[in-house]
Length: 294
Ligand code: SF4
Image (cartoon, rainbow, N blue to C red):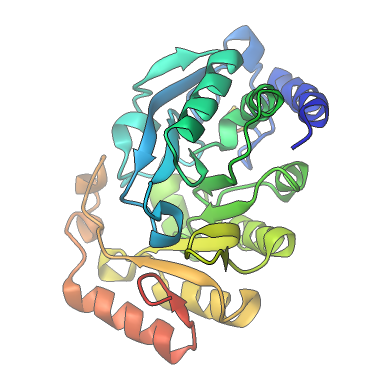
């Protein structure tokens, strides 16, 4: 990565913080003056934690772990968020871009296989600036953009050549569910467009000889109880529009976190049968790269 190019891009992106339009909410908050949009943050970056993570997908974890950096705040604000303290309550420490660059470099020194930016959307300008500083000091890990799938294509285009691996969620493809659980009825269409753009930029997931991901798209889908995650529609979209070689992690760990207990239909864990049915459907539709089956 060219540090000068990153620095120039960061300056352009930072201008957007004056009337923020980084995510599809397009709140217009002047975050430089302390205003906060739906994501809950002004222009300061809050890091909840960082370091090697072994709970991510096998191609990211390898033998030395994925270098996760968890950013606090989130533009999607799902009621069932599995990281509620971080996304809604903004737990963590404020860091400036120089300190953030230091974190990126520390993750590389720890031997992690990649830099895994968790919930980066609302702090993209600061991340790009920090990547520029880190690159000038020799940082060279593949960059993973680990997001909720609620992304503007215009912003993703700004990240072309910076992000090596896109890892979006695809949560549900029904506007009514998206409105009920995230107050984002446009999520299905926005996420479809975003994943199409991610696939265009990086293509299917590519692994090196050790089985470590170096580039490409990895989609996550959390199977929810009672059909709330519209899993069959998600699988159809991936199989028919993105490609049967899309790497898909069909996750079985849904539990009612956050304020999900206030929504009876998702106030329970997903059953084993629901997840097995989802997996069987993905196999029937020809998705050949299900997590753990690569
Ligand atoms: S990133 Fe935050 S402030 Fe900016 S548009 Fe999205 S929700 Fe609003």
